Image (cartoon, rainbow, N blue to C red; front, side):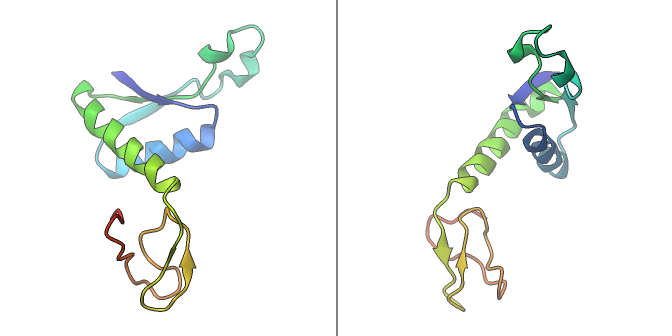
Length: 107
């Protein structure tokens, strides 16, 4: 079992856990309940962590997490089909469902 990610945000860890599980990677969240121990336990020891159960899944899990984090910072785009604006993390238009056709778009 290997740690793949830690964050101050438990919702972020939960989202990434769902992402990995959808990709068929078994994982667990650790330190989910340690926020009450802050002060008695060092801060960095209390951060929620995401661990993959099979060490062989670690490289693939890291790639998926990196792709997810890159998509959050992707620039906004305008749909070529209907002209509606969309945030960078979305690969399809919210209005008409057309795919983002930019050359650097991630699917």
